[in-house]
Length: 184
Image 1: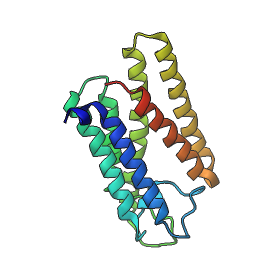
Image 2: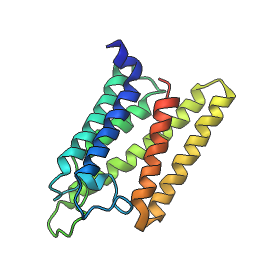
Image 3: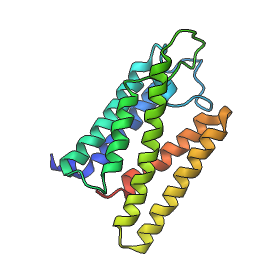
Image 4: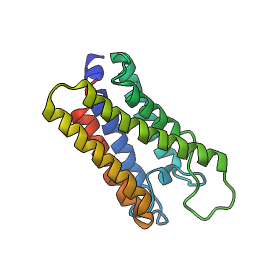
């Protein structure tokens, strides 16, 4: 248990990366990683969506459990909300990336809202680390990651034909910060 409590951020991220890789390996020819998002791997109507749905749930619940076991504080609350929202995106699937006319717009809207709340919460989590850190070098590192996350989030919205690439860089930056610089 102590090993989990000390490394839940690493464990949750490693598990998530494994699920993402497995979902990519088993993806269909219709999925283009440069254009499609990771959420598309768990989208409505996609016959292999369960892999990514479980990945979202495992990541979010593992991260959230680790935070709870270590004690929920003002410093960790935004990252807890982030984890919870990511987990819930595994339940509420995004719209199909395949040509399907019938799907739940409500479910897709909830998915999008949860993803946006997750992104905002993650950004607030980085800012919280800045305020709770006394070392100026560490504050600068958090600020750089904050600006990087914001910049990559903006590029994700602007690069419609390359959203997959933009999102993977966003995830990479987020995972590096979560593993190396997030301090409960």
